[in-house]
Image (cartoon, rainbow, N blue to C red; front, side):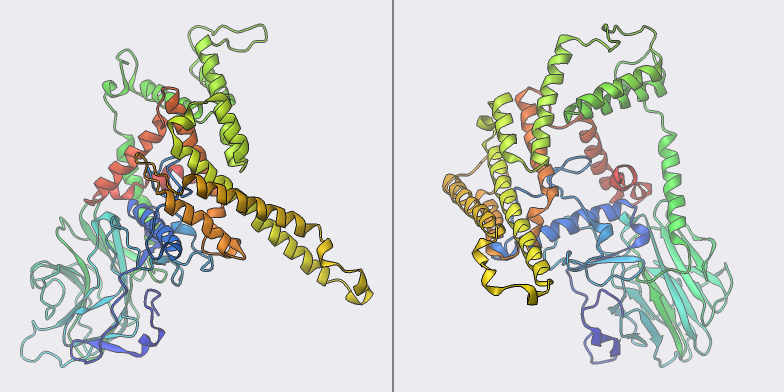
Length: 602
C-alpha cells in the first residue's frame, strides 16, 4: 500500500462518489518527496522545513507541547541561512532514530511531521487520487492509487466520460513533475486518457476535451489540448502498458512516455494550476498510478540531470559586467572572476582561523598566476609579511585555538582562552557565555552517559564469564572502580547544573533570540532519563551540537575586533540560496538549481 496512509486496513476499501463509505483523508502532517527530485531546490526547501519540524517535535514533550528554540540547535555555518538547521532529507533510513520517517519504499522519502507544520513548508506534491475530485462513474480503490470505471457507461452521448484528479496540484517549485499510469485492464474499448487539468474542470469529460485540460488517449493515440478535436501524437496503449506524463516547468512543456521510452513533446506554453488526471469511458477500464512511490519504467532521473545540465550551461555562459567585480577595468572578465574567487576563499579560511591553509593557498595562487614581480622572502625563503598581516595571523591563530577547544568539547579551555585573548567578548555578549555554559553542562552529561554505557557493557562482559569459577564471597559491588567515577561525574554535573540555574533563572537577553528558561529546560531534561543516549533528548548530546556554539563564539570575537561576523563567501552563498528559492517559487529553470546539493554536499 502507499506509505503515506495510516490505516493498513484501508486497502480493502473502495471509494467513489456513489458510495457511502468515507474515504480516510490524508493526514495534513505527512509529506513525501520522490527520489528524482532530490537534487532540486524544492527538495532543499523541504529538507530545511522537515528538519525544523523534527526539532520542534523532539523538544515539544518536555516543553508541554510548545516547541522552543534551543541554544544548542544548529545554526548557519556554511551555506545555510541564519537559524536554519542542517537538513537530513536523504538519509532517513533508521526509523528508530528519526521519528519523522513513515515507511520507506524504493524511490521516495516520506515524513510524518507530527503536527509541527513550519509556516514556510513548500506546497505538497500529488501523491494519490482525490476522493473529492472523482466522477460518480469511477471508483478509487484501497491505497487510493488504483481507479476503475464502475459505470454506468454513457448512453447516447459519446462526449460523456468520467475523470479523476490527484489530491494536490503540481507545484511549479519542483521544476519537473512526472507520474506514470499502468493500464491494468483496457476494459471493453480502451477509452483511457492520461493527462492533467485545472481545479475547476468538469469530471464528466476525458482529459483534453474541455478548456484547461490536456490528455493523451489510448484508443487512438491522439493528444487533446482544451478541445474535443485531437491531434495524432503517438502509439495507442492498452492492457499492461505503462504511460508516463511529465510537466517541465523550465520550458512550460509536457511530454509522455510509453513503457519507459520517451515520446516527443506533446504540449507547449502550459499555464495555470495543474493536477494529474485520468479519464475513462467503458466498463472494465482499470489503472494504477505511480506518483513516485515505486520505481518508474522511465529513467526520469537521467532526464532531470539533462535539464539541470542545460540550466548550468546557461548560467556558465553568462559574463558579468566588470563593474560588479570591483574596479578591474584593465583586466579581462575571466581573470577578474578568478581573482574574486581567490579572495573569497582566502577570506573564508582567514575568517575561520585556518592560518596555515591561508598561507598555503596564497602560495599556490602566487605560483598559478605567475606574478610579474617575485615576492620578497626572508632568509629561509618564506614570503615576508607586513606587520598588520602578522598581527592578523596571531589573532586568527588564537581564534583557531578557541574553536578547536569547543569542537573537542573542552569548554573550560575555550572559556579560559577567550578571556585571555579577547577579554571583552563575554562582557559585550553575555548570551554567548550562556551558550558556552549550557554546552559545558551538555558535555558533562555526555561524559556521564557514555561512562554509564561503558560500565554497563563491562558488567555484561563479566556476566559472560564462567560464574562457577568465581567465589561469591569475593564479589563486592561497591569495589567497582567505574561506579565511584560515574558517581563523581554525576555529582559534578548536578552541582554545575544547580549553579547554572541559580545564575540564570531570572535572566534574559533582550537583544537575542535565546529563551533562557526554555534553553535550561532543554538541557536539564537530560537528567530525567536513565539512558540519555537513547532518550528523546539524545540530539543534544551529538558532537554536531558543538559546531554552532563554536561558530557563534567565533563570530562574536570577530565583531569585537571590528570585523564582519560572517565571511563574504558564506554571505554570498546565503544570498544565492535565498535568491534561488525565491526564483524557484515561480517555477522555471531556477527550480533545477540546488546550491546545497550541487555545490556544498561532500
